[in-house]
Amino acid sequence: MIVPIVEGHAERESVPVLIRRILQDKGVYRVNVRSGVRVPRDKLLKPEEFERRLEFARRQPGARAITVIVDADNDCPRDLGPRLLARGLPVAAGMPLSVVLARVELEAWFIAGIESLRGVGGIREDVSPPGDPETIADAKGWLTRHMLPGYSYMPVDNQSGFAQRFDYVAAAARSRSLRKFLKDLTEIAQALA
Image (cartoon, rainbow, N blue to C red; front, side):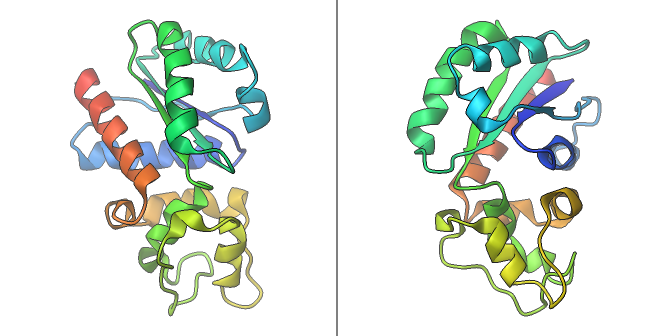
């Protein structure tokens, strides 16, 4: 079983949806994915809290791998990600561990693949991705601005549906953090196969 650690309420469901899709597309069907373990970002980054949450994930019955997905916000993913991974590896105790910081927000992944979401959940049919989706400071607001009148992006309402439908392969071409997530998940799938 893969145990995701996420920061938001919506990610508790949407990240496992995305992980299952990716694993199935890779022909991996015998790996369960648990609902995400939610830890607010500010809590997760506190000394010893990250390790405590990893220990909790590692002790889940059937746990075989852990993924941590958190928004980078204003932090540099290339700095914070490796630091968190270094802190987590001793706790994971040989279990595959992935730490990915979505730059700036996880919703940037949906923006990177926005063409595949046209007509889904209120997304306008004429929307096109911006040049660099990962530089958008308010990805949730961007999604709302590109919805039909009367719609607004609500993570709890939209995120799982978007995770189920967006073209993550095309989106990865525009999103370095999503490429890292796909690479890490591929390595986890190989380790668990």
